[in-house]
Image (tube, rainbow, N blue to C red):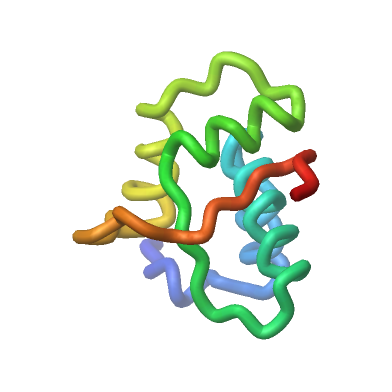
Length: 97
């Protein structure tokens, strides 16, 4: 028998799929959720690959190359680069200013 994905999708299956991510994806998602939660009411967040690398280094992750982060953001999460990224509010983890 063959089933389409929407035929076998259950809340339990979706929960398993959501928690069965690679470690990089889980860590980046946790960082972004932290930033969004601390800035209540925000609907949009801007960042670049080097920002994500800095956040991961601050959290103790080593050796995550920009290609892996780019694949995660563009291929897995389907995020598209901004046509103009000259100015945005940059967040640094562990810095107080």
